[in-house]
Image (tube, rainbow, N blue to C red; front, side):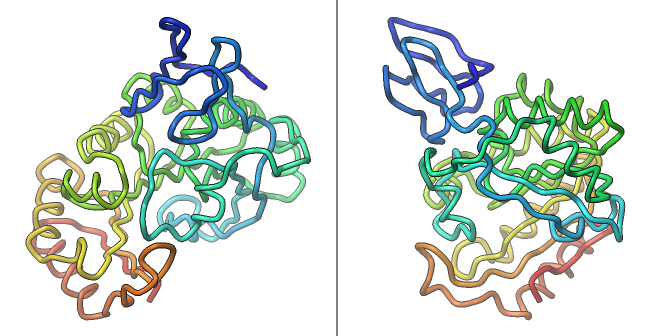
Length: 286
């Protein structure tokens, strides 16, 4: 295993500094994400080099509609996530424990395969790439050296310092802004709102091409007032020209009895976004 970045030792515990959870990890245990473990007082990545998914996707699937449109991206993922979203569409890998992946892929091998397949970019996606930070960082650095672009698809629940470090290697990002409510973040995803808002501004200021996804879940975050408040915040914080994707929810995971988002709700959200000064609004999963 590769030693993790962004941690320190305290009384035999490994204190992870990667995300706001600040996990205090005992010997032999893992943090909330499941992919960072304490071995003899040191923190290691338990997933480095062992992807659970490899694929070639249209870049629009990330979704990125305004970055290298019409091209494909080499996409990969490891198990693990520091959120616990009740409606996660990739819960079978995001909530899985490391250990079932048997084939090792060095960062050099991933970059070479992306080039061989004719993909101009690599996407770190499907689960939460920032929990397999070291694998993402090393691959992204090599990708830049070989002339490839790097795409981050993330919920961005991360501390500013590690995000600032890896942002220097990221060319484009789609960030999942799940709810414009700290209470809902904690209740439905086990996280918080403020770090995500800070991450959006940090990525923007770092010159990363940014697009935002808001999955509208019936009865949870499809309230008109919440949508308006979110759009107002984006507009008033200099993000009015950042493409916003309102995505349609379909039953999944622990929200398998929640109905799909109505088209009426999506069109209403699009109208509200325009009223608040947002310039580029897309509807997804319709």
